[in-house]
Image (cartoon, rainbow, N blue to C red; front, side, top):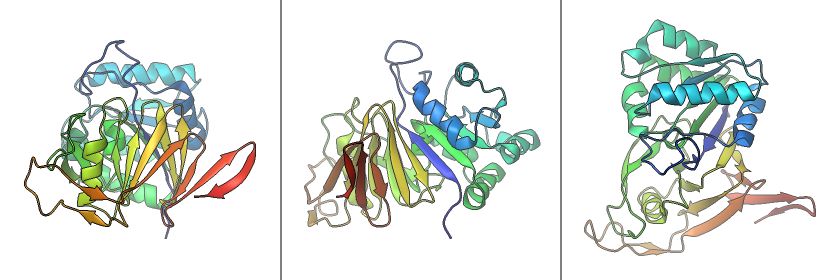
Length: 289
C-alpha cells in the first residue's frame, strides 16, 4: 500500500536569516516564501494546523519565532511549536497531542542527528510514521529537517575537495522515505563527493543533492516534483559498472564508474519506482528521459 501522506523536502537557504554565513547549527534556517506557500497549499490552506519542530537547532526559540512570523505573512494563524529538546519531551503528552492534531509537521534546520537522537524511536516518531502512511498528512523539513527523512541518513563529513573514502558519515534516519539518501546546501557547499560515496555504499538508494531555495514534493513515496528557484542533482548508482569502495582504505581516492546523474530544475518530475524523469513545460509535452 502506498503512503497517503506528502513529504516536502527542502534544501535550506543560508542567505536568509542572520544575513551572514554561519554554521547550520547556529543559522536561522528560513524558507523562500514560494516554497513555504507550497507547504501551506499541500497542507490544506491557511486554516490548517502546522506544527514547527525546531529540535535540530541550537537556537530553537529564534527559529520558532522566524517560522511564526513567516507563516503570519502567509495569513496562517493556526501555528504551534513542539519544543522537543530531549527524548522525554518526545514522550510528553502535550507534544504528542500537537503531533496527533497537526495537519503538517515541519522540522527546522540545524543538526539532523539531534532529530534522530531525540525523536527516533519515540512515541512521536511512531505517530508520524503511522499518520504519514495512513492519512493525507504533510511532513516538511528544511536542511537537517530534510536530511533526517531518509532511512540511511548523512550525518556529516566531507569538504569541497574530498572524493576520498570516508568523506561521509552515515546513520539511521527517521525512515519516512526509504528509497532516497538526501543532502542539503548541495551546490554552495560542494557536497558532491560525500553524496557520491553515500550512494556507492548504498546503491539501492537514489542520492538527492538539494540546492538552497529548492525542494521536492514527494507523493505516495513513488514520485516527486522539483520546486523552488535552484536545482537538484540525482545520483543513481543502481547500474554502476565499478566502484572501489570495498577495496581501498579510508582516505584513499575513490573510483566510481557509470554513476547515472540527473540535473533537474523546478517543474521536473521523477518516478522513484521506474527511475525515470518527466519534464513539463509550456512548449512541450511530457518527455520521459
